[in-house]
Length: 229
DNA sequence: GCGACAG
DNA sequence: ATCTTGTCGC
Image 1 (cartoon, rainbow, N blue to C red):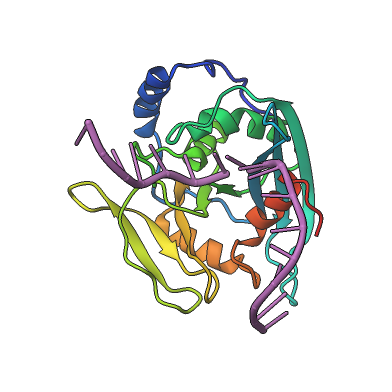
Image 2 (spheres, protein in one colour):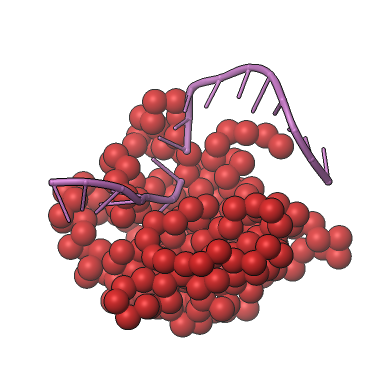
């Protein structure tokens, strides 16, 4: 994919927060999807010590085979020096640069992207999935393994059960707490960009194998963390 | 001032 | 996220 070059990525925390506030109004929570034929999963890992950031993107064909197997259409691993430390709420400034490096080398363009992290379920409604979606101008969904902000009740025990994740004095619904697998800690799904929450839940559910994470992010996780099967 | 805090 | 051994369970 051709990617717009990066700039302004060495911001102080207060500058980064100001930028997020400016960009947040551009994040779209309503569907604006093209027909989906390819779904990408994105995740970032680090070398021992954290000086090197490793971004992995895996692209899967949609729909899966009759047996439920997803065909891997393309995959890229991109490494570069780590630019920023991890700061809760500012994760995208640490991970998006490396992710863009991986997308630059991708031969195909996905119609939907699942990102390991929050979408609008973020204090300023612009988590890493939303930020990446804005930059790529592609529909994205945030799939996080734990909560950053918001309140929720425990979802039911069955796979597919979910409860709303709400935040603010007005109880904004910013995401969903989804039981992606029975007896396992739920995952946090939210709109990233150009995908409504209900649609995000449908896609994540449709991509679930027998594991906790949907295939796109599960496979990207595996690649980024250097593990094999 | 005291917790909470994606990856 | 990463550093790490064994262990419980399908």
